[in-house]
Length: 382
Image 1 (cartoon, rainbow, N blue to C red):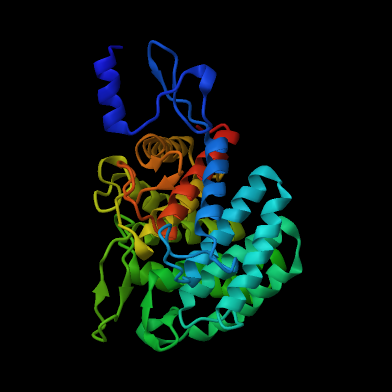
Image 2: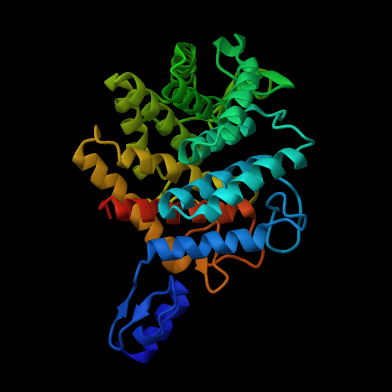
């Protein structure tokens, strides 16, 4: 390959070219004649875990701040996802350092949140309950299970008959229902049932799912809409966000795993197949750019639940191959085009390098994608 072509490739992709004798962790390789990209998923996930911790830890070390440029704002639900990626790291490495990080965050988040796990937004509390329940299953530490149960008790107060059922989005707006509040609640209820075998938890999951499926999911395509009655007029908001697609897949998958009812798996597959082809979700096969702030987290959430579906034994091999191919393409594109080195910061657009300021939300999505790729690699799927 001519030097001019190499320079062009570097300009387009943003990759670092190094010789094999001076390999940098997470870097593509150049063997002297051709470009060879070494997708070091686990090493790169380690590097981004380290960068995320060191870059975003608040000055008082109790939570993770908004961005890498000095904004110390605390975002409750972003920090709930920090807990989730720490669990990812621990499950992958068995490194006890992650257990220490999880415990500090559990206590620091509560202290930063005025001494309570409770929040006005039901979906925010669901994310913390989901991540603490995963932390419990990974570590056996009852502090996490107690937090998840405490949160679940409060979350269930948002279930009411407004708009025909479902769970409200927030405590001060009980007549507005949406996918962000209901799909994660279904996942949580199923996992609590799996852990503690309380029949009412599974019943709650099934009831919420029936409402969500009948109200905010296109019955033909499986595309998932955002909410209903946001303006007080009973109208459906048909906004299409990546994380709503992902959490509905997760909700259907959890119910399938806990009931054995194939209807739920059919629903999960229908929505997942739409994800792969819907230009409102993944134009050209790459998950769309939803910018930073809260939107920065959306793609990572979709990736988490689509990965679980790809690993479900009940999924047909043709569908599994499509999901893993899609996830692999997104991960490889991100690895070469949207992860800055040596800072290991993620872009909200997985086809271009990040700007100077990167929100924690955006960084977490990139890290979730890398942890997904590392998991799929270990499972022999990519």
